Length: 222
Image 1 (cartoon, helix red, strand yellow):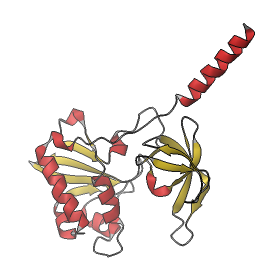
Image 2: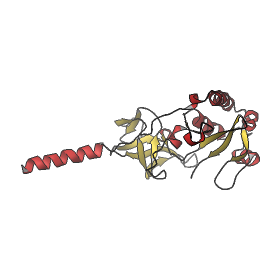
Image 3: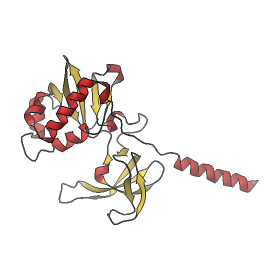
Image 4: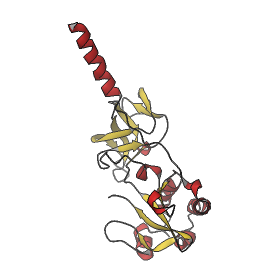
């Protein structure tokens, strides 16, 4: 009887550990509003072409560019250096626009946020402590090397990142190449940094004003 109790405790413990995985799966509600879907389609094409004139035309005059007081079109243009060929805006914005998003139900489809990882993140998890695997069947490797053993494949898992043991690129402003992560179910290893995204990374907010869609914010942080 004692051994059965111990065995049951062990099985329960294993079930408890591996039953803790959490996920933030892709959602795209754009088709709920035909006018927004058409607007986003045109905007994506403009962003791919790095069409600064078109982009400025869809910015709200009070667009929020940061939580540090940067507001308005001129602040946005200055902050992102949108006429510079080296501006990082285009890649950041394209990632946000091409990865789904959700409408705010309380606003009756007049408010849309993208990408899905922002508005779809669980409210009970700390957005500063957790991130999400931004992809399907992403290799989790034993070491930060493309030739290292694949210990698991992750799809949209919530993870915690160990930055101290992650690998940065000294030639590129210290940006991370490999992130050491642990899923909530206990899977540990290294993931290519491009497949890990903070829920409070850059997101675009759109609102319908006077019958037209405008981008009212493009911010990171909280």
